Length: 206
Image (tube, rainbow, N blue to C red):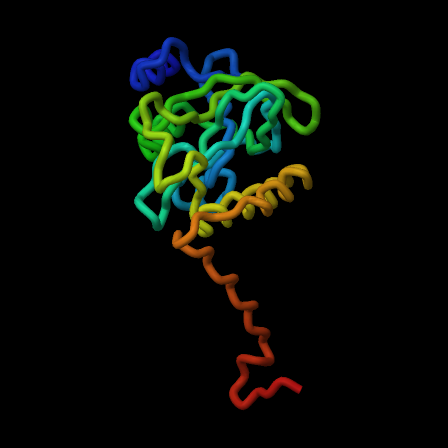
């Protein structure tokens, strides 16, 4: 049975939540760079069957998964925190893609699954799974108790949140986050595409 294989492969007490009676799909709540389609669908090659903006109450966005030195000092995770909320993207994916995602996210070394209930922006409540920091990871790095991500990584969160249509209050929150000093900078915006008349030999802009 596929859900049992998924659970066994990850050492879980129960399989990830599914909206299908036969357990052939997983509801994954992305709160980090996986919110951006160029990461989730492009880099990871995962094609979700559904994608919805949602919020997890009594949970918070944290950056307590260690990265790679000063260039990429920290990555996003979800944490239980009473009175807080964390917005993200709810993906419906296959169990095989869930396993691929876990492998790419270094589960269970860096992350472990976090089971939670999320509320879609249309009011529906869905049992889902997200990723939280694995127990035993060092929490204090670089002389600070609140590690910050790189500018590059933050740009992925902001782009993904805007692309998914997350609430303006969440977009503003992400915009207020400051990157770690000396970390990888955000990429420069792509230049606008050239128009046809600009590509003709001898064309001038007047």
